[in-house]
Length: 217
Image (cartoon, rainbow, N blue to C red; front, top):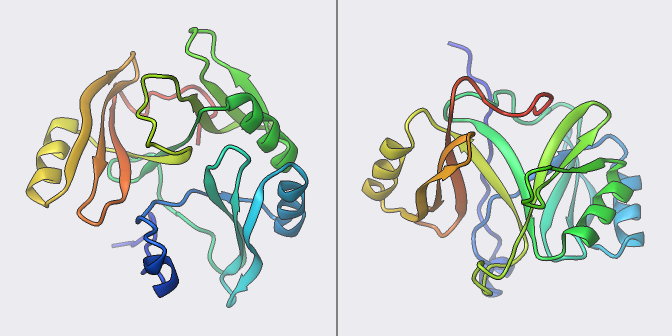
């Protein structure tokens, strides 16, 4: 059987624990010129709280906070490419920026990575980001319906075959279903979950085989 990486986990440092930082899923953008991207992030009003550094022979990484407060990583691979299995049941399927200032965030990511932002025509204000003809991720404007305590963040979506069964497993394993199961338009159904450690993610059952807009990886 071939084992392929789907995601990773690391223990929080003592400093992070002393600062009461919650466990989180970190979204990483693969980008070859990581030093250039970090420099542009600082130019565009972002915070570089972990400057580019080598991770042995695996690759080079940086941790960034955009001007709206959402944190993410940048990864320039060498020996380790990153997730090798995606867009299948029980793997990562989507990354989504959730922010209260989407225009500022859009300008930031377009400057840092050269992405093209396109607003969907359904009136939701949802923006997808593309590099060339390949869609990379999405961005959701947080409106007054969102709890004020929820910060800007990068949400991770994992695909599941049965969202109701996934919700039941979450509860059995000591997690909490925060939202749903809810309908996501014609795309499918989803739940927002908090695991027993406190990290939040979304599990989504898609209608049909990976029913995402063309070009989404």
